[in-house]
Length: 471
Image 1 (cartoon, rainbow, N blue to C red):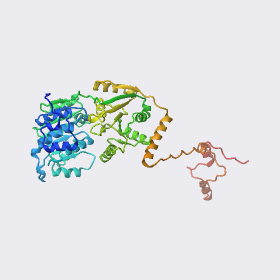
Image 2 (image 1 turned 120 degrees about the vertical axis):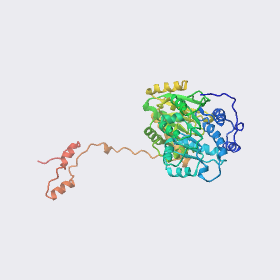
Image 3 (image 1 turned 60 degrees about the horizontal axis):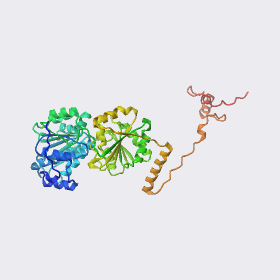
Image 4 (image 1 turned 135 degrees about the horizontal axis):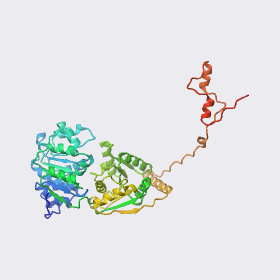
């Protein structure tokens, strides 16, 4: 595994890129190269395999997609024949959200060229994806499972792939995609350029690189598993039963108007989102049990600021690119320390400042120690003095009233109905009552059935007084 330290270009115009690609970059608003782009793009243009280690939000997608598009341009065709548009570049991503984000970026970079791009992932109907694939695409972005579905259905062939990218490879291994990766890589030509990009490099990732990359150049623009220096990291020690109250107080105290709150379970995400809605916040849950249409709709609403708090499992820790997200909150300390790096990587992107807060109970001591060991720095621990419950509820009510007033004038909440003391009284039998079933039994000349007990006995069982008997 090699590492190169040659002088890196600073601006896109200094790269050997086609004018059409540079025009697309200008349209997006890019001018200066990020560190990972400075180092990786020239190496990919030279045809070498790359292992790229960089923090999330540093521009890895452009680092591999721009040089790949440049290399494919001589093969671009305006023909409508699918045979002239075979898959020549394959990008594999672990989650649907990341695949969709990468596809959107690649499509934006290639918009002035004849190169075709497509994206396939699970959770939605295969038929529209099949129609696109059969028309021919040069760049295919996919999740492993759905790609195998299309391969088995003979909707796509990978025999002419020249470039393959494993994006967030460590996450793919974490969620069990190694067998799928091995099957997919077996369909590819042996002579190809392989690029592996990730925010963390575990021993398993290094073994994967040794198996499928040929003398890769190691590109590290930050210490492995490091977190961004522009993200302030805080830990608040709170009891498990106080986390909900602490979350509400921190959202208000830090004025976090848009936040991703991470939890460890799908059920926990749904429950917390419902509680936050009850507290007057515009919150929605995002997790693996949601359909792809629901997840995309939720993400779109969050990006449009229609949702204040996005409660998510680690399915959202990778691939979510929210511009100027002010902060993230770890409601649960993640099971794996590596996931902490990706969670807080959602804020402080593209050089902006960010805030990452973790709520830690007593049982989370070991998990915090693992995180600090991984990122090789200590995290500031603060005490949180919770306000009295009634005062917190008043603040929540004020926030609801403010939001309703801004939407359509002030509204007053209906007063709570007083409790009726009748419901607290014990049962008392009415001596004048004459149940219908006893009347029916007498009128028909038959006794009550064996399953019908006398009224007096039922009253006694319920704590009532027996009717007065006459002598």
